[in-house]
Length: 200
Image 1 (tube, rainbow, N blue to C red):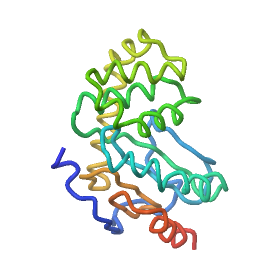
Image 2: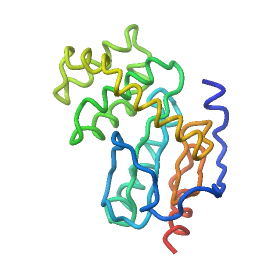
Image 3: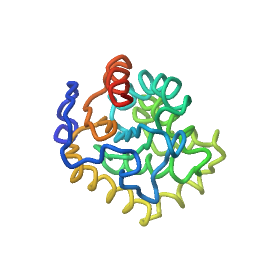
Image 4: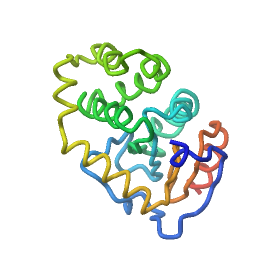
C-alpha cells in the first residue's frame, strides 16, 4: 500500500498525452458517471475503498464538488476504482458497489467510504460490509455471488492498470480534471481553483 499510496501532497501537473476535452476521455463499460453526459468539464476520480485519504476526500471535498459543479451541470464525475492494500478487501468492496446496481452505485459507494473505519476495523470486514449493504437491498447471498464474478474483478483491475499507464497514477486519491492530474485529498478550495481554471 505504501508503494501505491506514497504521496498525499497536492501536486498538479498537465499530462501531455491526456485529452483536454470531455468527449475525448476513454470510457469503460463499468464506468459510473455522476452528472450530465455533455457537461463541459470531466472529472475522473481514481480512488480506493480501503484508502483513508480517499474516504476523507469523499466526506469533505467531493460533496461540495458535487453540489457546486456536478449538480449545476458544469462538470461530470467519473468514479474509477484503483484498488490498494489490502488488495482483496479493496477489490471486493469495489465489486460490491458495482453489484448494487447503477441506480444505487453512488449511494453504496458513499456508505463504504463514510463507514470505512467501521467495516475495515471489524473482526470480519466482509460480514460488516454485508450488514451495511442490506440497507441497499443486497442480501448476503447477493454479495457472495457478486464476489464470484471474475469478469467484474478483471474489468476493475484492467481499468486501474489503464489509469496507471495513461495518467501515470501511483497513489490514491488522484483526480483528473480535463486532463490535469491532481494527486491527494485536497481541500475543496484547491479543487475549486482548478475547476474554475478549466471552465475558462
